[in-house]
Length: 592
Image (cartoon, rainbow, N blue to C red; front, side, top):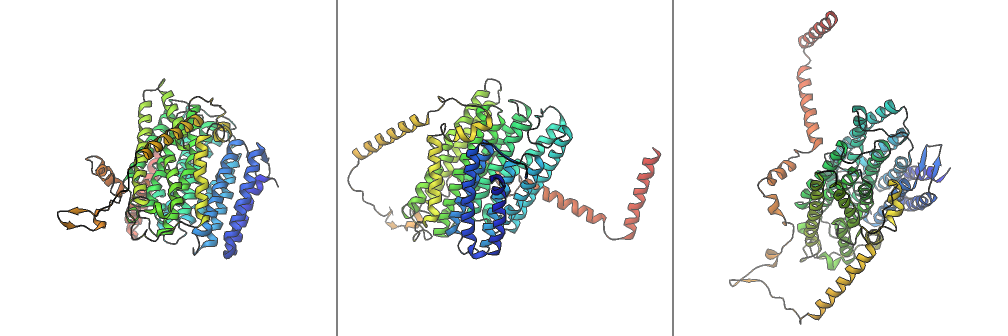
């Protein structure tokens, strides 16, 4: 058995052992995830590897994504060593994590659509079970399963059409132009599967619902990292190797429109959230819009930017969710208005969260800036051939500005300001929880400062077959200049510092005011946006789930069920009438 087979089979088999031996599950999962990570590095370094037995094939791009998926699995398992202590279904939890990485290997290394579809469907089972792992997430888990599973059914239609058109199910056996109804339907069917997995609008609503009930570790592992990697991987494969998306084509415009709407709508949802996890979940949706936007350009720099953003998002988004898990572990709270002053109590978590927040907001020299800059460059390149480029660029830029604004709100509410009842006794979490976040924060820096020489060169460009020459952005020089500017600013600040500062209690008209009455939580930031004339109606409609495709289809299904129940009422004369009507229709068809 070669490494591809082992990387797929080993975690799935050991998951069964975790189910059986609950008390040893966390150590089994830690060892196995470490082994899979090591194997993933060897697979990546080998360049190309084939397994005829399971129809698997590794190349630099898909093996790079698997290495990232294995890394996130190990990070989450390490974090869970402390954070998941006391979880009632601990053996199942670790078993589901291992099944997920094993199935992910099957998806990423599949050479044909049938193998990919089999393991893609397998991924839905642990996703459903992990969302409902705490026992109170039945409704959210059901919604997740129906939305992701329903998209899998559409994928089956697309794969069947590829078989009819091409006579082969090998991925990339032939490039099919999107110039007729059959290829377009096939592409859109596969697109639905990729969008549901990645959380692209309108197939996104399972993610905020899952964030309310699923553990932070699950959110860091699935919607934040693994599902984004797999969903965008599928989008890239079908858009590059199977149905090439041409710049300014109708499909290209559709992808860029969906990406732009996802960026703006989700980040506007994040601005007004009061729950820590739910706010982060909306950002997980918003960021995938950049990936779709970049790939939708059909230009090499845009595709490379979208794929690089896929890796970057997985890094900083996992870091943010794990930091949220650390805060929840230390305080027992997820409502941001009940948090505050944690920067002093949890300094490691604060600085790590700050780096990840800078990254997701596109602040240089962190990794999120580089991938967003590449996407911006591709949109500017489109200006030579399309008048719509300014719309997509404005959406992307406003998305970054609103992202930064929402994280200013979040950082102020959670880490700055005065402590609350929930945070008074908070302390930094165990090293097994903060070490994974520190590693992810370091990657945010490394992937930004050494973007061209490391991640782009080895992880992204092999997928695009295109080498981007330096000059568009010099991360090393830019980092040096930024550090120089910060050092100069620090010297000026130190030179102008005055003596000690005295703090006086607030005083108004001779009446003393309690400190809690003057405390600014930050949770109410941007409520004025919510009350703007047109936008307030959009927010109200969103809260009523007017834009939730799951609720729309559920309502339609309930309506059809009521109609059918009315017709099938159990009365004999009703059924005789139906039989008579059916007979008349049959006779009319025969004598026509």
